[in-house]
Length: 269
Image (cartoon, rainbow, N blue to C red; front, side, top):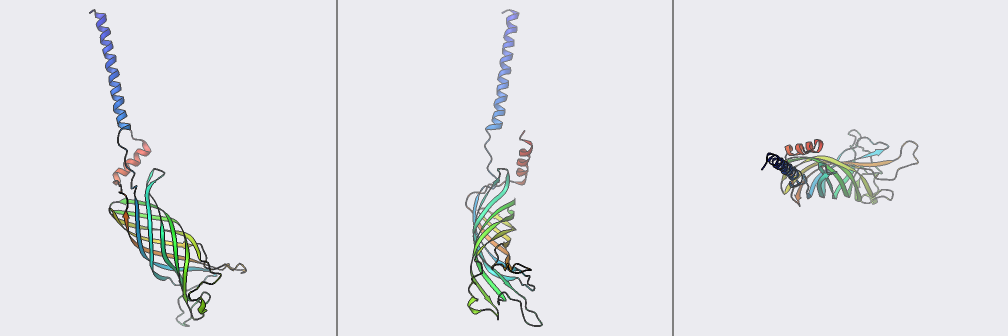
């Protein structure tokens, strides 16, 4: 074999090795980018639970009534269904929650210690309203297993099912009945904060909720030259609940969450 032929053969072998090397590197990058198993969604699971609590009820009036007193009403019960997922496929701390609830609204006044008299609402010095409602809430949470911190906000609709009230000047026929001008349909805003202890598949939840009704108890007096007459319930509710995970909770450590956020912002490579 001549010197020229040997040089040609060596050049051909060098090009062939370079081609195979480049192809091998391409395959390695391809495997790295596309063949790794996809990570699971963070906290992507379904949960159902029952809550029990106590309501601290009050009502805001116009014209304003002084010496109002918060009323303590036990017997708040709710059944809630919650779906955890990513918001816009990016924020892993999101959930939607809805359900049904039974609770109470009310009003009351403090008696004047000197005269022994109290303000009233159409003769009623104290009243309790039974309410059934359907809350729909968005939740943001932060998980530090086994602890979860939660913040909820949303709307609700409901029905004032019954009323009981008392007072020396109250017409007896309305002690346990609504007047024709009193509204039964209710709606408003609801939200609060809380925390949970997670012992998969069970979670114990503690929440403080604020329920602000946008439905006045009775028709406004539009003939008034000074005020519109209205009465809006405002309640604070403390609850404790037990919730059951219907599907497996897939959580990640704080370090893993930070790494994923970094990769989203700066890219994987």
